[in-house]
Amino acid sequence: MEFDVQKIRQDFPILSKKVNGYPLVYFDNAATSQKPQIVIDSIVDYYSNYNANIHRGVHTLSQVATDAYELSRKKIRKHFNASKDCEIIFTSGCTHGINIVASGFSSLLKKGDEIIVSAMEHHSNIVPWQMLCEKTGVLLKVIPMNEDGELIISEYENLLSNNTKLVFVNHVSNSLGTVNPIKDIIDKAHQKGAAVLIDGAQATSHLIPDFQELGVDFYVTSAHKMCGPTGVGILYGKEEWLKKLPPYQGGGEMIKEVTFKKTTYADLPHKFEAGTPNISAGISFGVAIDYLNTIGLKKIATYENELLTYATDQLMKIEGVKIYGTSKNKVAVISFNIGTIHPYDIGTIIDKLGIAVRTGHHCTQPIMDFYKIPGTVRASFAFYNTKQEIDVFIEAIKKAKMMLS
Ligand SMILES: *Cc1c(COP(=O)(O)O)cnc(C)c1O
Image (cartoon, rainbow, N blue to C red; front, side, top):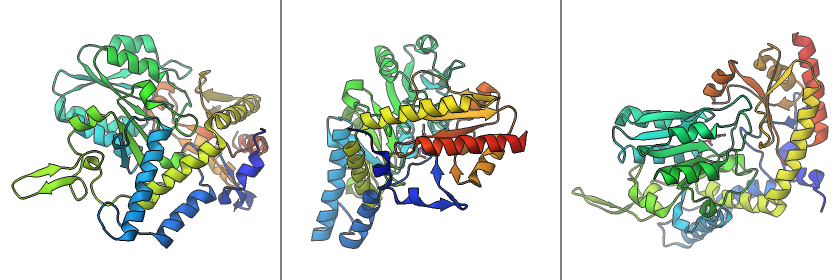
């Protein structure tokens, strides 16, 4: 069946809006994706028809809400092929998930232990680990990358040692689009007895990681980059690891019994789910996954790849354009600069024409330092974008270039 992008676009109310008097061209999907009506409706449905706190009430609405929330957890477990529902912890997003693991490991690691990060991480997969290092005296090592924006795996092999306890890398780089060879990274870490956390924030909108096949120890992602709402995500952890890690926050929901002498913690997943969660968001995360599966992630990836090739070819025709992130294995993200024009100026001009891109360091300052640039213009595509939109974008970039040079 043909990929009917015009039909798909009708699912997203925002795509027919005008911004600054022009039809919206939304190329900031790596920051957050747009939401289909069915996801928006599911949020309204929860608050209109069965709003109640979950896991507590004996009353009917509480049970309906609990069932919907837990059904969503099951959907997510199935989608990513985790072996048990209790291995899926609802979080407020990727950042929260990483902090749960980093904070937990700070009580498991000691001076002399080593942990490994990559040169292309989002700040949210750097800073929590630096905080852990400050607390514990653990050594942080960095996997370098090459000019194409690919991790240098032979260097990674050299960094691994019997002291390595944990490796954390992103599945897909938000600034470069590079898809990292995570299966290989995981296998090599496991040979040294180290655990691996994968930051999947940019991956799960383009592909479906299979948690069991990967053998990954921890995997985090956010719903809002995959057509779901903000304020919810998941931390997947192997059951044995989640049992070993201490809880992150204390509060209601995460306890078995509380006295002033001693508190015992609830079983998984509740041990890591203190307090009332974002219930409607958890439920609509499941709806977003159903929506993506109805279209099919394989079809989505194929179509987005066409957009990537088309946009790359058109951009490269503009003199002075340099693209950062030129791996063969990449998703539909293009980071670029034109000569010495500041990315912010380009972003500002094309915004006046209704085009949304991101400019700056994209929460990845080490990547910008590597290329010795202050930032880039980043256009990131989703399956509801079109070649016509790319044409509009290319014309706008040419206009901006003319005005600024
Ligand atoms: C967006 C993003 C994050 C942070 O996700 P939040 O939803 O803001 O917590 C982490 N890593 C990568 C690669 C991202 O793109």
